[in-house]
Image (cartoon, rainbow, N blue to C red; front, side):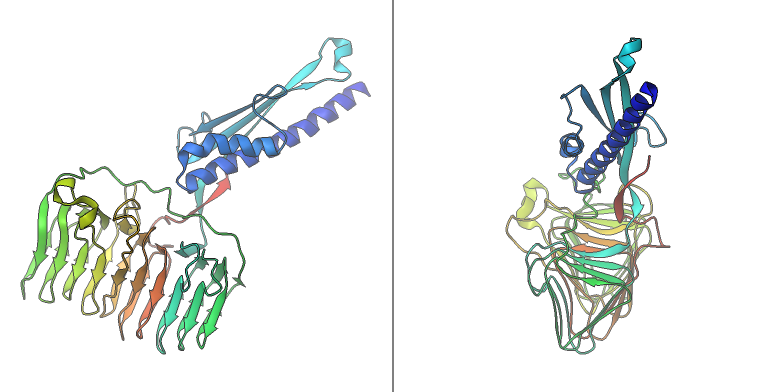
Length: 397
């Protein structure tokens, strides 16, 4: 009977310890998901403490490893390992000289499982955080759609505009002022905000003070200009006469952005980073947005390897002048095709062009998302095109 009582107590303690380890691992992985790697250990230990296992108290040790020490994910910094250890007193075991037993439970969580969502508006309180306006304007997302704004009109579909989604989750409210929302799944309001799903991404290294090319302009009628990967100080401009064919690789726009008043841009296996100009050329003062006018056409696909695999446009979250708003316009017409995800974590974006169809085989993350003027925009999500950059946190061991 004594053995049964002690064994039952140990079993119960192991279950509680496993719950604390699971909670701690998920909390640590969630901080990585939010791009706050410096808070992984403190958050994991805080969540373990909330589940009755406080590091350094009552003989408890909570070990947190970013990059598990053992197991299938050993050394992988996208995963967090939490090991909870405690000496448990033996009520009857002391009669035979064993006053305690040590229990140790382990959990691993990380950013791995693909998310069902692929369109995110990150603004916390804006009206029209997601806005579709115009009689023939439509935004179709073959995935879940998330709006973090707490505004009562966070999602505004007006003037016979149409929003088609799998699921729609909004922190604030939805206003269909003469517009239509068609969902194959659920439509929910008053939901908690979601973290930036791509905050974990890391820019590849490049020298922010070095220029391979300066003030590049493509303006030759009837001639295709071939562009190579590298640092484009002053950005890239393509006029109505220009045709640019991009070789595979990374294109870093250091000030100047990407401007198309018309023309054509094509490229396979390319990724754009938009950031500040070199300090000597004006730094943040010379930062410019993506501005692809309605007369332009784009057929582009993202890189499939490296830290930005699957990302077509990446806006540096730290770029630009603090407080300034840069509304990016991806209004390329003539049935443009963009294969890859558009990531603008601190800036809004307008998609589509009047009377044309823009297809995005990827996702969109921006502070605000707008479709108007008779545009037809289809977001198919990244599934089947490349490994999805949209992840969610899950327990894996």
